[in-house]
Amino acid sequence: TLAFSEIVRFVAINEDWLTGGSQGTINLAGVGVAASYDEEWLDFVETVRAGIEPVVGDLDTRNSAMMLIVWTVALAAIVVVQYLVKSPWGRVLKAIREEEDATAALGKNVFRFKQQALAIGSVLGALAGLLHAFQFSFFSPADFLPLVTFFAWMVVILGGTGRNWGVPIGAIVFSVLFAGTRFLDFAPLSWLEPDERAYLRMIVIGLLLILLMLYRPQGIMGSRQEMVLE
Image (tube, rainbow, N blue to C red; front, side, top):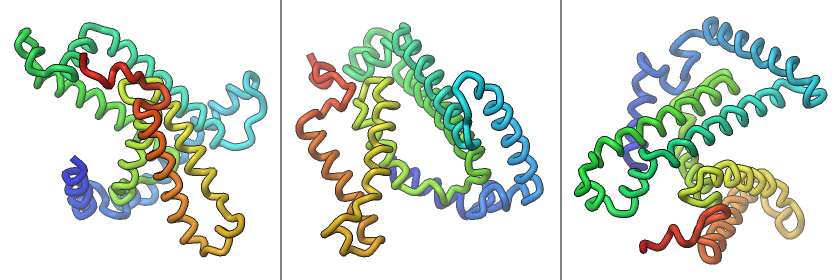
């Protein structure tokens, strides 16, 4: 899967007429059009900021309003996914996860259910990409390096597989680890060059993940019982 995603990324980078290549939306739509969309989105964020200030207090920057928008969308997505998981459709997916052949023997179209799950996941990913593009006013296929995929896996592993609420918890923990390790500048680490400390922070995060997998393989919100087939 990772190899295929890299193939798609390189094809997208080289197909300038379709994706804008390494210049992304600026090359595809033009600076004027990109700036126009950016201005409209910033106006919307400013409207949101002004509307919620009486409730949450003074927000210094648009980034604060954008953070609230992102978390609102994320929580809404989690609620929808939680509803799907509890539905008969979600129970079929759980059955496929545990025993695909037995589920097919009961007359369920396993391939179709997998397609539907993939489609829903793609929609949620597209929604996240839309918010990413609005936040940075620009996106390019070159932005989505394999490291982004690894970060997403880390979030899921930290939060716990099979737990929808584990995703935001894992995202918060990973963000704290990723941002907090930037301050590893005390002795003897301060003797290292800045780029060397940047590599060191990834090693620290990796070691923490290894410890988590050793002592709590189900993740923060995961259940050890679900990891064992009955």
